[in-house]
Image 1 (cartoon, rainbow, N blue to C red):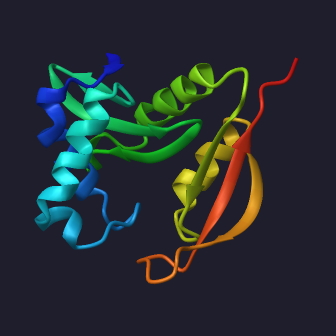
Image 2: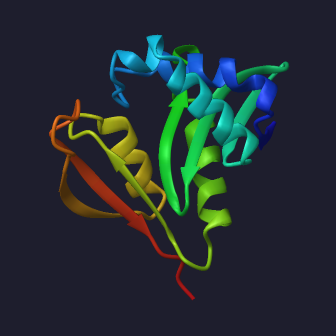
Length: 146
C-alpha cells in the first residue's frame, strides 16, 4: 500500500533512510544527531513523506522537497520488486503540472536506470555543497508530455 507517512512513523522512516546510507549517502550525524530525527518527524508532519507498506511494515519511503525527490529508500530485502518505481510514479503524479527532479550519486546505477526507465532526462553532473559527503550528483528531470 502506498500512502503518506504518519508522524508517529518518523522513527521507522528515519531507520529506513539510514539503512540506505551507502546509496543516498548520509552523513554519520544523521544517525546520532537528534536534529535529523526531528527533521524526519517534521517532514512526516508536513505530509511530504510517502511510504510503501507490506503487512503493515514500511518497506519503502520517499521524501519530497517541493518538486524534488529528495530521498528515496527501499529496504534491502524489497529492492528490485517495484517499490521504488511505485514511489517515483507517485512523485510524477504529484508534480504532473510542474515536473519533478531527482538526483543520485554517480555510482548509483539502479536509481539511474529506474529514473531513465520512468522517462526522466539526465541533466548531467551537479556539484555537491562545499564540505558535503558527496562531491557531485547526477541530476534528472521529468516533465510530463502533452
